[in-house]
Length: 534
Image (spheres, helix red, strand yellow):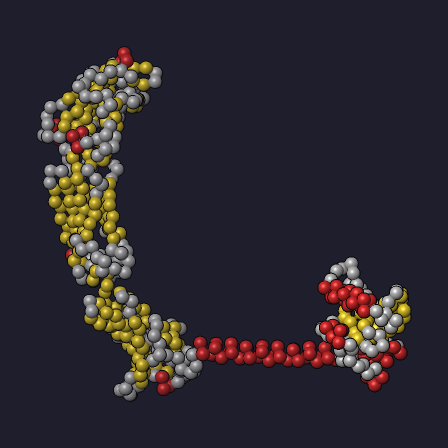
């Protein structure tokens, strides 16, 4: 019996021995359409240990299909056909060389695998030593499915996860499930294996628990004496499992004694209600004053509720309520905390399964922040207004100072120019010059002649002064070109008027800038050319 067991074990690992040589071939698993290569490992047992050898004169490969006892020689390596680059010898088979290919002595490669290639492959030496190995062919890798493919699940529902794989070979593979470590009820799991001739299946049925969504479930396929595995995974999408809310903790911050929380009057404390649920629950906080049966809903709407400036009137029970809707039914959980304010304490006692928040006494921090921001904005506006008024006043004072300095330096011509009482009374000009009444026209009272510079046939050029702006005391030096009183011919006047029109249209850095013109009775037209430094 022991000899039979040893012989069976030797066949499974594909190993054969005699006094000198050891032959080994390992099992393989491949997908349909791929290639598989068997290696015939030949070692010699010497006094120094196991040594790899090139092999004897002849190596023969044979194939036994699944369900058959008849083997077929598929490839033969002859010693005389080996070269330094590998074996290029012949094969003695009735199958094509393309199907069974010899790349490296003494290995064999099977190309384009089909289900009929599954079976036992044997490497045989000329000394009749043999070693066999199994080739498993897979139709596909394992496929994981769920009995209910969502998209929404509910806590407590039963869901079956199934892993299937088609294979061909002498021994069936083993399918194993790897489940999440947490949030799985291992006491109520149900496993089931279903195998047929060319199909293996493994399923696990579990009751859904909260927070199991997002966890991976892995199915792995393993074969005898093959280290590599094939696997598939499945999961419940995050937030796909709905469950009723529950409260894990109801605490106070700063932390106080668990069942006897006390705080001083005038202090602040925060209640924290840690709850879970899917859909995400809503929080409601209620306050039950001491010795009063009527409750009060607090404005807190989230996980925490801050109580500020506590007084003895705030002593009582604070209740946290979390609620959501599962399967169209409103579900909720509550937990109560007793808080005692006696000038030096806050007391809390936790009740089962529920949580809630409480409002702040006095102003909300957000309201205080808004008031502070509004006050800062008003202050900034006032500061900007005061700065603007101050700058305007400073500008006015500087203008007055410059005006006084200018008045002190006025010569007689400028005094006369600025004196309104001695300005000439200009009458109306002839109608032919009326078209010059534009923005270029300067009042005669704002112009004074100083020195004659040049004279032509009907015009003169003077150095003069004029007001820079009407009704202001700023004086500027200008060149004045005027038509002389002797120029009475109409042709001369028309020429002069045309020159004015040209000067108004031309502005160039190499020319004196045209500032304007003036009219009077005795001297018909004056033209002012600005000679200020540009």
